[in-house]
Length: 323
Image (cartoon, rainbow, N blue to C red; front, side, top):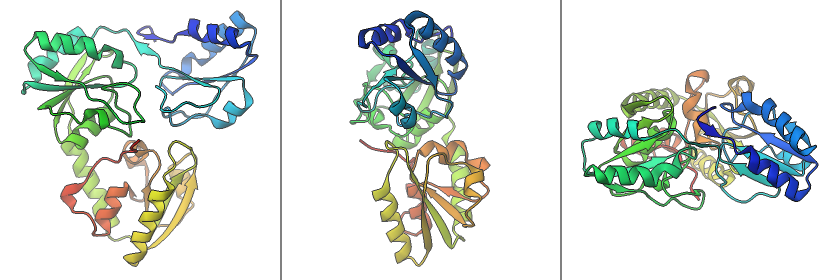
């Protein structure tokens, strides 16, 4: 974690300012190994009691609501705030890794002159520097403004790519992993170069392989007669209105559907329901990241519309939660 700023001094300062006695910590899996050290440091410096969330944390949409009720302040690490939540403070854990080396390689890989710049919470503060560097090397650069779920210009979420809707020939994503840049590629139909300052790796995201995998899952679901439509109980992921609309569409097409509310969506839990396929209206990452784990097809809402014959196969899109 040496390339990330956990901002513990800020945490301690807030605790002291508010005279808080009971503190909650919530961290994503990539930071969870730091939880014990953070808790000990906070307790040593403030005298407060710290409770650590042992639940999975997938984003700012996934606040531990039980822990929130039990503590004076819940510090949620690793994500930018989507909307203000009582007694929850988001610690963004910004990276201070150098971005110039990966930008040099990204420029060599780029084919267009108009570049869209996007990033995640950890690197979004570096986008202005990246734009200046690219401008100096003859590229026109664009950093888009997202909708109400997005805190920073150029920031993309796992479920929201509104900041990527700019007039660009291609995109450079500054950050790690495949999920965010894959979403940009599918949301914009543009080439996306990943410039990862943590691994110092630069490469192009492969969206074609993903599409072939999704087409195979849709094809399998075409024979399904019974569907479970999953609704998340996490407040920032709940899309009940969408679930109801999908259920109505299925009814018109003579298909049996059941609404299933869930907090943690896992293959083991879903195996209890003897259904032919599922439709996920919760976190879009579940459908993509865990696709290989599900024994029955797990569809996005748009993919379900393809199964129903209400959307053309060529109009497959990445699922988004729009603000």
